[in-house]
Structures are given as C-alpha cells and as structure tokens.
Length: 488
Image 1 (cartoon, rainbow, N blue to C red):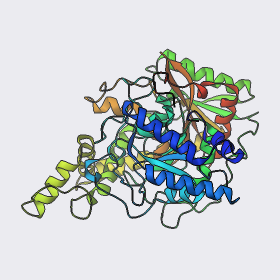
Image 2: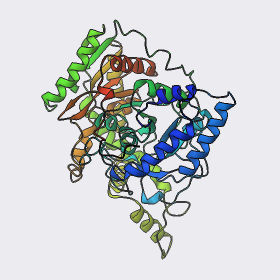
Image 3: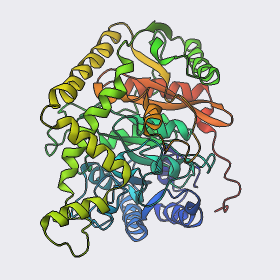
Image 4: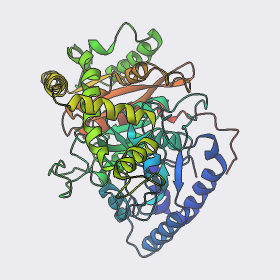
C-alpha cells in the first residue's frame, strides 16, 4: 500500500480495497521502521492519525465520503496544528504547541484527510539543503549521503521514501521546487495569494507561499483543490473562484507556446543537466507544443534582490520570538535585556541569525534607501520581465536547479554557494508567479527537475502540462532503491 499515489489510495478506499485505518497503520509502521534513515519527521501523530482514520471509515460507511476521506498525508512543520507540536525546525519553538489549526490544515481536516504528523525542515524555512534544522539534517532517499533540498526537505524525503503519498510544503525562494527536483518528485508553488498563509509561521511575508509535494501532477491537483481559496483571516489571500484542477489535467497541449529563457541555459549549467531539460522540451514538441526562445534580462539580479528583501522581512517577523510570550526561554535571566539576548542567542541557529542581522542592517537608518528600497525596485523589473514574456508565450520552462542533489556538508561552509542553488527559482517568488518542478531525467543516477512557470492564477495550465508529460514519460514513476528497507 505504501507505494500508492493519493489518487490511487482515494480510488482504492472508494472501492473498499482496504480501510483508512489499514493504510494508516501500514504507513505509521513504515515510518517507525525506516525514518531513522531519513529523519523526515519531527513529530509522528499516531494517536490523532488513527482517530482521524476511524472517523473517516465511519464517514465512508455512512455514505458521506468524498475524494479525500481517509487519505493519509503529512504537514511541513511550518503550519500550526492544534494540540500538536509546531517547531519550524527550531530550538526557539521546540516546545510550542499551537492552540489552533492553520487554514490549510483545517481544510484538509474538513475534507477527511488523515495527518500522520509534522515534517522536518530548515530552521524557519531558511535554507536550501535541510541541514539547518535543530532536529538534525534530513537525508535524501536516493542517496543518504546527499541532501534532499530545502527548506521542505522533510516533505520531499517522506514522499520519496514512500512514507506518505503527499505532503504540504512552503516556498519562499524555491523551497518546494528544489527539494522536489532533488528527490524526483512533483512540487507545486501556487500564485502568491492563491492559498491562505494564515497559521503558516512567517519567514518573509511577501514571498512565502504554501504548496504541495507529491509524486504526480494529478495528486498535486487533488491537494490544491483542498488548499486553494479565499480566507478572510489572511489579508494577502485573493478572493477568486477556485476551479477543479483535476478536470483540465487531460486537456490537449497542441499549440501550447513554451518559452525558453536564454538566461536559464547558462554556460555554468552542465551539459548533462542541459541535455535532460532539452530532452523534456523535445517531448513537449512531440505532443504539439511550440518552442520559442525568450529573454528574462534581470534574472541575474534575483538572488541579490531576494537576499535583501527576505532577510529584511524575516528580521521583522522573527522579532516576536523573544522568550516572553511563547517558545524557548533562557534559564535564570538577570533582567529583561538578558532575557531577550540569551533567549534569541540560544534559540536561533546560525543561518537564522545571519539573515536577521543582514535584514536588520538593510532596514537600518541610512541604509534603507540604498538596499531595501533598491531591491524592491529591482523586484518590479523582474516582475515586468515575466509580464512581457507572457505576452509572447503560454508557459515558461527550464531547469529547476543548476545541479542534482549535492553531498551533505558540501556547501555549508559557503553561504553564497548555497544561495546560488536557487538561481532559477527565486525570481518566481519575487514576481508572485506559480511554478512547478517535475522529474524529467537523471544525471549520475540522481533526479533532474524541469521547472514549469505559469502566468498568474494559471495553475491549471501548469498541472495540465505536467500531467501530459507524465502520461508520455515514466520519470515520475522512478523511485529510490528502497529494497533494503523492511518490506511492510
């Protein structure tokens, strides 16, 4: 049962092949036996999951089931869950139990889904390798000497290791798409405002977006059907009708115009990586799509602009973590200043402190105009590049990452080298556009991701294009070698 997709589980439950309790027990057992290899979970909610599974089976027996009733999944530990630990991968929140559910958590609960627990992540979603978590690094199931990507590495590793069929995730600069690429999965970052951020612990509020990591585009569509929609509790959430994303998956892509940004096929992108991406583009041409070279001239400014804007917002958002109201508090503080300094100094990790300091500096008197304001102006230029491109093409494609998954510890000593891993993904967050990564090949037996970029609120087209590719290829069916794991 553990190798089933969300869609397959939904159909099996409807056909009575097995119960929600049976598949929930199977996956919980699998997590217990194998997750010590990957460290993908921070909290396993066994008691809650079994209660939800029993309730789902009762609901199905009463004839009140829908597509998600009894389907297991898990949440990235950035989403607040009522009565369950929510840590954000940080010592600062290592004892925090939220008194409410995030909106997307509530949506899945209402749909009848079964939550197996909370997934590991880079601390406060700051990282590209999932090595900065207070609870230890996450390992890539394709090669446990390599990183799964970050910050949603726990979500990606759990799905790749077949511990859960799908997981929620979040993306501030590529934190869904990059782990999906490294782990051979399907990762979807919706348009900014398409999914509520209420109850998602903020890193950079104008960039953060909740999304999905699954094995297939069909599963992503099923998850987005639950997650998307207006939420009055989130002032950045857009009041716009939500289509059924599963109904357009099989639409023809005959005549689809694909834009290939010349800036994404850089000289430092290896020939092997380029070849896998171009092979995928050729597959689209076979299906009737047209290809056109385009330019996104301000791409090279995305990383410097992001690493002013995101740290500035994080320095403001994380100021609430002070050791007074909730979370970690230092022992025996001498006075209020000592309480603040030691609680924050002891509670935050190195990467979080680095970004807080950079952000505070960029927002300080005398530097705001020179750094933060200028970065926001560059952000507008990057957005305009995409607006102009979508006047010519329907969808944009290119590599998700410059390399396959790298070795654990390979980039931790050089933050700039680590930041460059997001060179192809960050611009979408600055512009607020939707993006996906799907597996399109392998280099040295490691997955390679193809990034699909859509116009605003055009998730349906992205999912359709991804699904058609997955119907004509089998890259999404390839899985890590898990033969040494217990056969349960």
